[in-house]
Image (cartoon, rainbow, N blue to C red; front, side, top):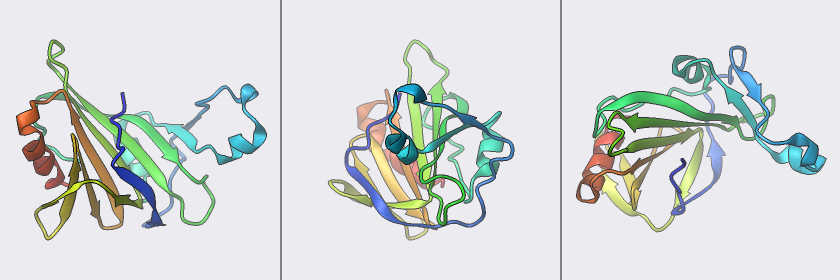
Length: 176
């Protein structure tokens, strides 16, 4: 279940602090490669699977800070996807990680959804909000975008009380 980030458009430079460490990751064949044209295959990102959240975070070429205080009780973050968008080995790898924390209350499911990458994401159609440490966030619907230290964070909430979404998004963004 991926939150749609329709108000945000990708593109811009990327920041890399260290090499993407794939030594503890497994390459995942996300598509049926027999049915895909070779030219299309070359353009597809490389998908990885990590044995744990800790290993996934340690593999990243940037420092990732996750919010610890969530707006509802969850089972903790899990990795939904980990991708090298322009293939390992090329200069300026863009590495994207998608994380989710699902509420413990299964009768009223809620999700905190976080997409992080070392590439700036330009924002359109969002309302600017002031965050801690002279940062700014941009809210569109149930999603907030924050760009900090060369890293883009898209944080979304699903299933949460609509009247509390903006405050919850700001609280989450202030923790990164």
